[in-house]
Amino acid sequence: MPETLPQSAKLVVKLLGQDSRHIELTHETVTIGRKADNTLAIEDPAVSGHHARIVKVQAVFFLEDLKSTNGTAINGRTITRHQLRDADVITIGQHRLVFQENATANTAAPSPFVDLDRTTVLRGTDRTLDGPTLTAKVLILAGKTDRLEYSLAKQVNVIGSQDGAVIRLTGWFAPKSAATIARRSHSYSICPSQGAKSLLVNGTDVVGQQDLKDGDQIEVAGVKMTFCLLSETKNTSR
Amino acid sequence: MHSAKSDTGLKRLHNEDRFVADPPLGLYVVCDGMGGGNAGEIASALAVEAIHAHLAEAAKNPDLPLIGPSDATGSAPANRLASAIRAANDVVHRESGSRLDYAGMGTTVVAALLHEEVLAIAHVGDSRLYLFRDGTIQALTTDHSWVAEQILKGVMTEEEAEQSARRNIVTRALGVESRVDVDLTEIPVRSGDMLLLCSDGLTRGVRPIDILQILSGSENLPTMSDRLIAMANDAGGDDNTTVVIVALRDELQAGLWERLRKRFVA
Image 1 (cartoon, one colour):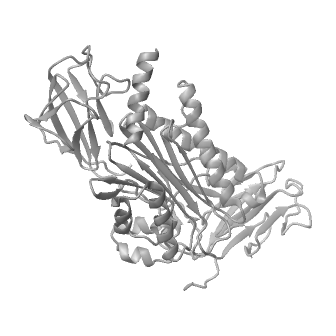
Image 2 (cartoon, rainbow over the protein chains, first blue to last red):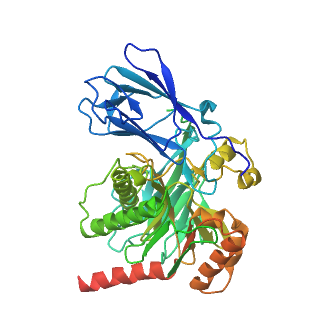
Image 3 (tube, rainbow over the protein chains, first blue to last red):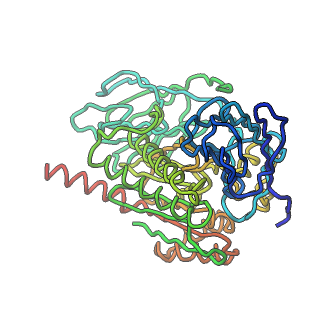
């Protein structure tokens, strides 16, 4: 294990009418309450005997309210159990406790953990992986379907008579599933279903799967349609 | 046809992985638990049980309410699968609050639900699903892990990630918070395809190309599972390893038979 830095966190304690001080969170469990047997004893009738506790699980700290009379809040919201993050403000009555983790800026590098082989959770990292979103539709040219135009909004768009098929075939002998049009990251592809008689794209038989281009002519189970790829729209940060 | 095996590995005392394989439901799940003491085992066991139960119930009663929002890009079965995972999140999260030594426990999950010729895949964490098709192998899940995010950002190469001391850190897990964000994917599948669901015990030490070699072989599925687990242990056996291999020939045919049978019986 290359890193030996201890995982540390502290609690900045600002009790009403007192100077602030801090407590290192080294114990597995820190208890907070009015009674003297607590790790942090607060002499205040508004605080329950055993009011709350902070539990350390591997590298993660949790705050738990111990069914206190007046409740425990994190950043203004009452909680029963909460995973603590750096700079969380715990409010108990009129007292404030600020949770501070050993400064690791903007979650870039998670703090070292006790057992590096064990799977450990880290939350709050950004996931800004939204790429451009493609949209596509098909226009029915011939054959029996319940509509003349379908937008391909799903990841897998079934062409068939089954429930849940996006392109719903209504002919008497229409197969439950004739083919599927799938969206994968930045493209659409079509493949015939098991036992489908034939699937033609621009007049050519498709055996495995084939990527679709704007304007492609699809012919399957007696239905002819045109595939239309609509302009890409950037999905900017939500 | 499928084969599922789980192994404690060489360094651990407990196996925190759990799996379920239910061909009639078309459900295959692998969970890799985490937490102190035996909490990891509890979390993964609760999760597979809850996912299985939710889907079994939904099969009997299609009106069973969905848990969480419905994803318009997913089919009804895919949304049902995501719902099952949210149900499991709730069960694990509740249980983690019930006992001090369960606090903070959680689990990864990768779950596949086969319906007709479409496969829905839901996952949280760093357990993976690989699709083997026409002699190639492709991961259909993207790890929710710190190193995977670094690779996506371009600040770390795959090789650096493999060596990173932080490769065990997942950025999402089931049961840790009251809500969970589930990644949902769907793809059409066909006869001849094979699925591999696995915990990171396999992928930490065994490269996809080596997995491909095993899956392309002509051995039967149980032998393939044994070989994959042996490879993980040869690579150090640091972690528990679970593999679920599903060959989609019989599964799809079973679906067809089921349809025919229904048509004639009904």
